[in-house]
Length: 375
Image (cartoon, rainbow, N blue to C red; front, side, top):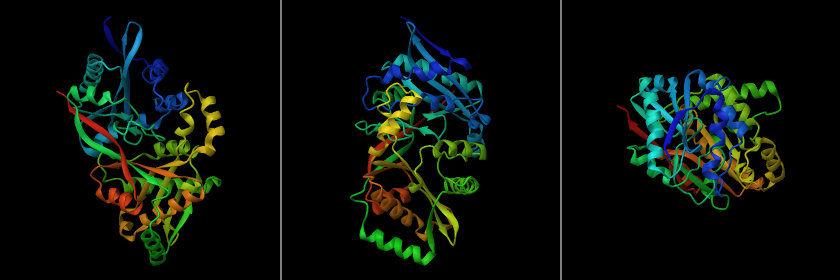
């Protein structure tokens, strides 16, 4: 039967979301996304990301069955920030068939070329501030919260089209048993006293204080990561939108500032790995997801370190060591056995050494962002 790749209309978003089950329904390591969350993510009318970005969804069909999908994405803020003409692909799923992959990427390339782009990069779903990159190492474990998962053959399909590595993103595994060295304990205690550093949780209950806390987090986030490869600052509206989502799953014990003389200079966010619950929600429904979260949340034994940043002018104070020690102690007090630190750029030696030396972390997964020139 002949293969057809077609763009989806705005009212076919559910088709795009639902077809993901075609590729993973028999994979026990896959964590089904909540369809409700995917609809929010792809809602171009309500998600503020699309105020400076555009997206086109495509599916590949054969004999009435969807055998592949992909999205083409432009991000004006990325292009303004990095002064380039890069376009993106994301949400890629495909049968193990090179022709199908070729035609999906041909559709993306044509759409991006029409909009003046000269490079296609991805996967990003739909940006580097969301789930991004392709898993290329560490297929034996399910993904942790807000990290991607895919079959091994995806890398082969993408590389045969002519994509090459742009950057690898690393994930580190931290054991509660191993992280706490006597050196770290002594060092963080001295640092706290020398610089008058204190730890303060975000205030989730006081609306006025929470609003101010989110403003402080936003400022730290944009400043601490502004020099990172591929980074694009989140707008105020985007950050507020993201914070509202994360508030639903965040644990205040793992969401805190490090302050110097009562001024926030760093921020730490680790999320409980709710994927340990959602992996049982095979249909992706919202009610099923809530039920599994309510009945299994006490069994969650891992947190994912999502954000750990210190303002550049305070990085030499050792405030990061204070946060490492603090989260480890809190994990122990809350029955958490392990942590996933992801992701870290492969060429960020300071962060890699910090996780490796300060917390005895071991690299256990690798994700890849690909580039291909358009012509």
